[in-house]
Length: 234
Image (tube, rainbow, N blue to C red; front, side, top):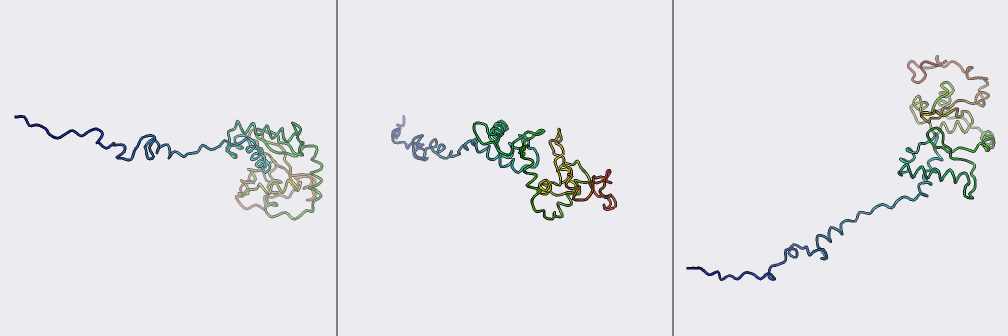
C-alpha cells in the first residue's frame, strides 16, 4: 500500500528571500553587502603637494642651514621625491637670480660640494662685513668662548668635530662667531661637504697677537684625558 504524501510543497514565492531575511537586499538595497562595503570605504587619497609649497619649504630650511644640504636630506625634510626637490631647487636658483623678469636678490642659492646652501652674493660682502663690524660688540657667552678656543687650537675643523669635542650642539654659537667676524669658512670638504672653520685676523688683532702660533700652550691647562685635544695640542 502506497502512502500518499499529502503535504504540499511550498510555493517558491512563499519562501522568504535569504538576502531579505539576513538584511542584505542586494547591490541597490539600503543595507546590501555590496553597497555597505562601498559606503565604508571612505579612505581619501591625499592631494599632491604643489610645487610652490615645496619651494617655500625648501627656502625656509635653506635660510637656516649652516652647511650645504644634499638633495636627499632636503627631500627627507620636506617629504617629497628627490626629483621634485631637484626641480624646486632649480626654480629657487632662477628666482633668486632674478630670471623671468624678477628682482635679483642680495643672496644666492649655490651648490657647494655635494649640497646646496644660501650665500650672500660676493658683491655685497663688503656691505655685510661693514655692517657686522659696526655693531656694538657685546661679551661672548661662555659657550661661545669655549667654541672659539676649540676652533683656534684645532683649525681647520668642521662643525661636527667641534660638537663632538664639546659634546653639545654648536650651530647657534658658530653662527654668532661668524657674525662677529671672529671665525671664517676656510674650505668645504670635497667628500663630506662639511665646512671647515678657522680664526680670522680680527680675532688675532683683538687678542693682540700676530699668529695663532703665539697662542698660549693649552696642554698644561687640560685635565688628564681631555678628549679632542690629544696628539697635536701646543
